[in-house]
Every structure is written in C-alpha cells, then in structure tokens.
Image (cartoon, rainbow, N blue to C red; front, side):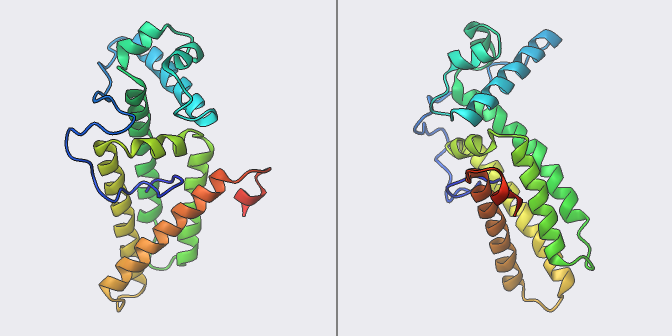
Length: 212
C-alpha cells in the first residue's frame, strides 16, 4: 500500500528495463553508501532536507543546491553520495516503503476472524494517516517515484500484498465467500482507503476534514 494523489502507488504498467523516463537522466541510485559515522550523518541530513523541501515546495521546485543549503553541507557533498535529485528521491521512497510495510503487516496479522471488519479498516486508516502526518514528503515522493520501474514494482508488490492479506481476513469471516468476490472486495477496499487518505492529505484547512 502507498498513498498519493493521482492514482496511488500501483502502476498500471512498468517501463521497459533501462528506459529513461521524463524527469530522469538514467542514473537514479546513490553513488555509494557511507562507511563512516560522519558520512552516514551527512546522508541523513541530506535526506531530511530533501524530505522537508519536497513536502513544502514540491519535487519540481526543489534543487540540489537548495537541498545542500538546507542540509548545511556543500553541493559537492551531496553529489558525493547522490548523482542527482532523482537518486535522492529514490532513497527516500525506498525508506518509506521499508517503514510502511511492517506497519501494514502488524495490522493485518492482528486482524482475527472475530474482529469487525470496520474496526480493521479504521486501524488501517489511522495508521496510514499517522504515517502521512509524520512524513509530509510522502505524497510528493511517491507521485514522482512512479517514474522508476524499480519503485513502481516495489509499490505494486506491496499493494498486492495488502489486498491478499485483506482477502484472507474476508475469507476467514465468511468461508462461503467466492474467491473472485473476495478479491474484488479487498481490492476495492484498499483503493477506497488510498483515495480517502490522499484526499485528506491534500485538503486545506485546520485539519477538521482529516479528523473525519
């Protein structure tokens, strides 16, 4: 599962391997992993700065110079670890996927046959809303990262895993439910949750809409 405006995390189709997509220059992975604590701390500052900027001014308006300035480091240090802005985006997106997967696993693993389905969905929404609230760049990151075949595939796998787990919850509650029907209900339920959270994330105001 991943939330974002404009279609969610699941991609309709994957780009051809090695394709250079709009907004990408063909090199979108970090140059090297830092070995020393000082280097790791610098990378953390770069990623934190990028997340802040992506979340406030958006991906397109953010420059690597602005990221370096916000991270209190030199532009050379940024390029030491990341070849371009797309690589920073990809590092953030991979981190968000890794953070989100265990949260979803816990919710669906704890959903027993006796738990009312609305309660399970409520827990799912609450957890994902909290995830959004603490990561303002999340929507921007995944809106852009669909240009990466690797990230699109990871997002689609996660989305499919959530649908499959929810399908299992539905079948446990109603063993007579046809598999095709369970698949449809699970898939639609996940898409509805994604759309609701994307709408809440984009709604202006004082948070009253989000609280509903």
